[in-house]
Amino acid sequence: MPSVTVKTAAGKDSGNVELAASVFGVQPNVPVMHQVVTAQLAHRRAGTQSTKTRSEVSGGGKKPFKQKGTGGARQGSTRAPHYSGGAVALGPKPRKYGQRTPKKMIKLALASALSDRVNESRVVVVDDWSFSEPSTKSASAALKALGVSGSVLVVVGPNDANVAKSFRNLHDAQVITQAELNAYDVLCNEWVVFTKSTLPTEKDGE
Image (cartoon, rainbow, N blue to C red; front, side):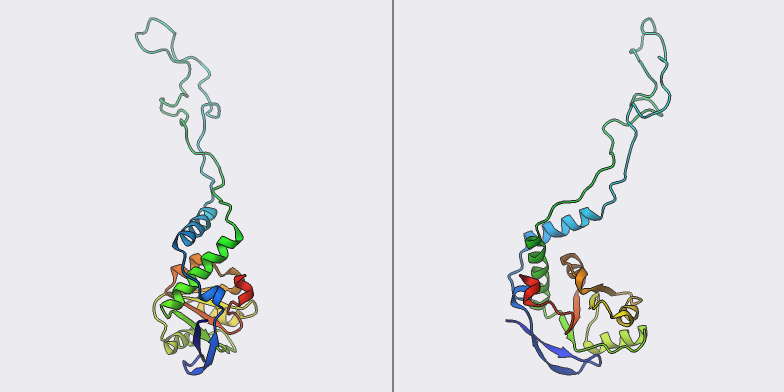
């Protein structure tokens, strides 16, 4: 079972904590992570693109010229796809891009991403932030004291409003609640910072 050193907001050691083996100790499954991330990004697509078919373009009810005697190909409407101002042939219409992803696959992808970060020693557990009021300066100083540089995912609890407001203005920090934790955001950031209260447990990995 993997374990990490618990830190204070000032960067001091505050004991050790064992990480859930089912969440932080699995063999990273790259194909599953790829499929889950692809599905998550596909679900974000609005799917509102639309073009008009021949039956939806206004005008074109009159035959442009007589059937025979002009030397040109016969035409029935100026709203055909090959005319300027005409319809679009086989164009996109509104659709949903969402993919059905099994819950077990989503959990495995998240566990794989977190296990990869643990293997690279990129998971930090803080005892408690103890922000009495929102302070971006204090949040920046805390990350520096923890030795965290580059992009970081800060996992907060539902009642950690001061913590969320403190980190959200930092350019390289992304704030997310424990319930929103997902493989894509973990993989997009170099570091993941938890508190002891937001750390996933064995129950979360079942």
